[in-house]
Image 1 (cartoon, helix red, strand yellow):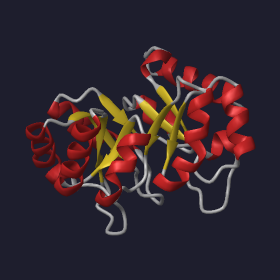
Image 2: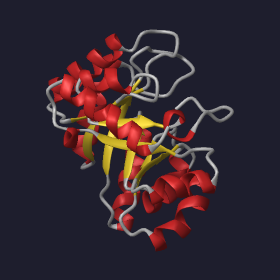
Image 3: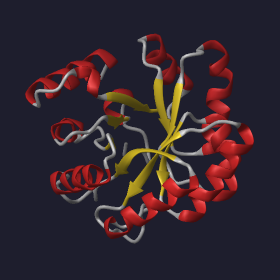
Length: 219
């Protein structure tokens, strides 16, 4: 599907939700995609991309930053605290803070690099053992810790369980964000971004619908 086709679907979803299209940011999930596929989306005008792995993102995007000075990179995968330095240097938004340890490591690196990045807290709305994210009941405590540390928490992010309808998870994330006064929600992927827009998503992460399905990719 082309970038224009995705944008058309976004526009229709926004109209149904009585929201302006400008209220939703498309994050093109480029993990595991070929350079040619990414180049085609860049040529079409997309400038905001999401990557799961720090090393893969570094190899792909460092050269491209020299050509496209308006790129914005979101880290949307799990981040180990020992990779905080590289992540802060490379990315423009960190979407996956889920512990005090990681929050502290990121804040230290942001201070060292004089690069205060906007961040999301990742919420494990389905409380799945194999998935990253803070449990819904612990979101407020982690948010307060991040506030006290001086991190710029921009909003909340979630990835609903693949075998459940996403609506309750999107509704929960919206409720949690409103309770904390956070304006941004990163939720919705290729299969459900229109539903996410209906529940107030401000950042949708679209991979396979835009680039085509690749092995081991579920974005």
